[in-house]
Image 1: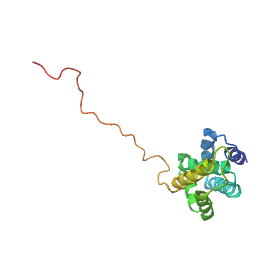
Image 2: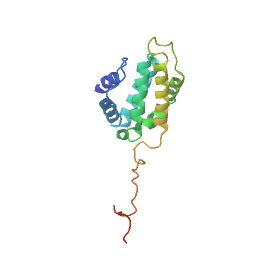
Image 3: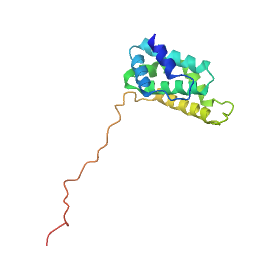
Image 4: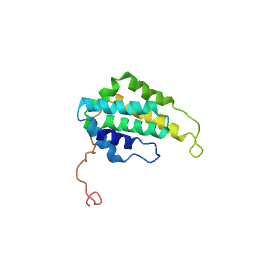
Length: 153
C-alpha cells in the first residue's frame, strides 16, 4: 500500500522536517473515503503509541494536525479520531511526554512533542475544517481623496 510508505516517510526518526507535499498527499489519501481516514488514523496512533523517539512522536502529531485541518478530508479525519477513545488517549498522553535531556538540545525535543500534541488536539476539536470562516477583511475606503492642499482661496 503506497499510503503506508508515504506515512512511514513522513514519520521517520530523523530530525529532518517532513516535506510539505507529504502532508497534502496524506490528507488527499485520507479524504478518499471514511475507511481510508480510519486506516491513516490507526497507522499514526499505533506508531505514536509504540515509539518512544521524540522525532517520530512529533512528526506523527504534526501529520495528525495537518491532516485534521486539511480541506481535502472534509472533516472525515477529525470525526474518525474524535470517535476513537484509544487514539485520543494516545494523543493526550503526549501532552505529558518527557525523557532524558538530549546532550545537544536539552528538553527541546520533548517540548516540541508536547506542543505538537496540543496542536493536534486543537485541530481535531476545531469546528473549522474547511477554512470557510477565514474571510479576508479589506477595509472599505471613504471615497476618493485628493492630493491637494485641501481647499481653494
